[in-house]
Length: 123
Image 1 (tube, rainbow, N blue to C red):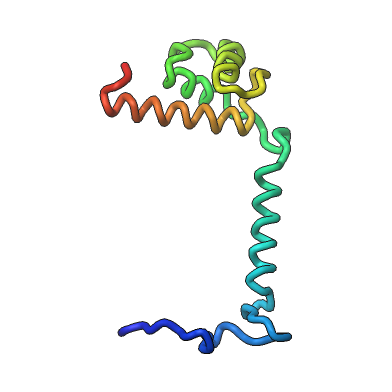
Image 2 (image 1 turned 60 degrees about the vertical axis):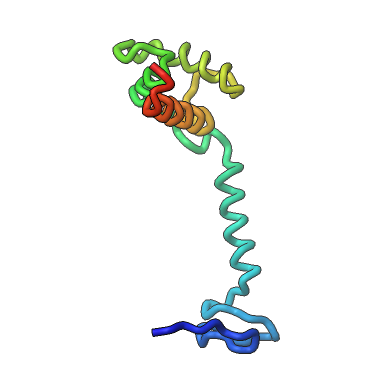
C-alpha cells in the first residue's frame, strides 16, 4: 500500500475545522496542545529539590564506588562526606544530600566511567 502526502488543502478526517482553525478531535489546537505540554515540562524541570526524596544511600554508595571516590565496602555513613566531595567537583550545591541534580550528575559520571573502562582508558 502506498501512502501519498496530503496537499495543503487536504486534511485527514481526524482533523476538523472549527472557528477557522484546525483542531484535533479533542478540540484542542496544536498550539494549545504544545502550550500544555510545555507548561507540564516546565513544572517538572523547575520543581523544587524538596519535591523528590533523596536517593537510597546504598545506591549512592555504589555509584560513588563506581566512579572511584569511595571503596565499594565502605559503610553507608561515609556517603555524605564523599557526596560533598563529589558535589564540589561537579559544581553542585554542597550539602551532602543526594537530591535530583546530584543523582543525575552522579549517574552521568558513573556512565562516563563505565564507557571509559569499556574503551580501556580508565582503570
